[in-house]
Amino acid sequence: MTGLSIETIVAITVPLIALAFTAMTFRRNEQKDTSAEATERATLTADVKYIRSSIDEMKVENKSIQRDVSEISKKVIEIEASAKSAHKRIDDLMKGHE
Image (cartoon, rainbow, N blue to C red):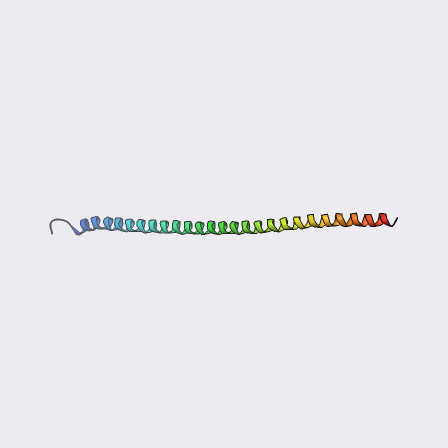
């Protein structure tokens, strides 16, 4: 050998190996963190899409209810007019029998 003892080689090699393992572990954990963030974003995006579609469905239902209420209002107005007319005719008949 050229003057380096085994202890010196081990003393240099072991920290280098430890440094390499530390770097690999750091990189792996960083990838896991990125993957977890991506999963969380995907979940949030899916939740937002679900909420948006639910709101759209509610808007459609609300418009349908508004149309139904409008139709019912028109029918009530017609019935009130018909009842008013019937009362007038009944009053006229009652006056004729007096």
